[in-house]
Image 1 (cartoon, rainbow, N blue to C red):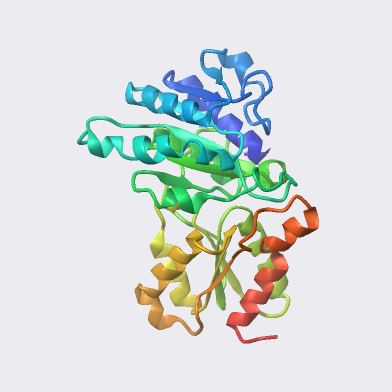
Image 2: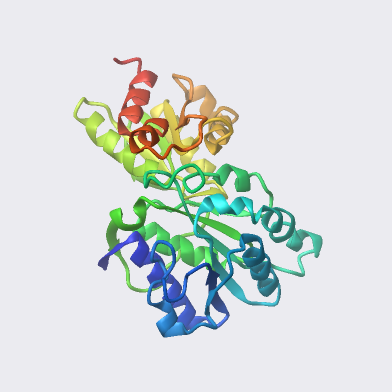
Length: 328
């Protein structure tokens, strides 16, 4: 065990996998000498060379299409898009090609590719570089969607994503790159996709949270504990596939639930989780309606105070928990 940042854990995972598997290679904008927009691939071109750490033109559709083609021939590309907002440019390749080819070829063609991309607000990157659009791709059958919240999870989930024969969209929150660090094993390990993690056990309320909201949920839980309120924090880690059972069992224990994500609340994946809870056996155990938290339905502001105001913060989670308990 060593303490690694989120960035270091991702870089170590890719480097270890590339040393063991010659079919794995990287492609993306400025990932070579520059080391990527957020430094995740820094130093990798020196070890693996430009054939396996491939700088690409600024063409997200072209990058993604090339990755799909190489995956169909047996390669295992890891694509980096500089910002998750740019996934909109690659949407045809993802939604109509990567997601559907295995089905259309009767299982005879696989697309084992990983598309890594930084998401989320909090860095002052403004409206076109700060969105959380995971619900868009989660809606498409054939795509898997992963959202690690910690360095440990990032390394293990990336290993599972690389090994998966299907296309995986791997969201990395920009605020976590250097602020999230913890003990991470040096050896290779894999965390199965679709396996949630109980980040904190509790008895009174469940918070289901993703990416940076996991950390805010844990801060809220710590603060609420001082008032005698016990909060359980569930991190799905992947929303496709979703570990419904862990969430349901938690809700059946606590009888109350808050679902929180940074994406806009309207149409966000939290609505899917809330619906799943009410359609399951957990419904009869609820003592209060499912509470959802998400961003306001506005473009992400450049102004840091407005940016913070439009996304759920720790105090919003505290207020939501108290609402479900009918406490002031």
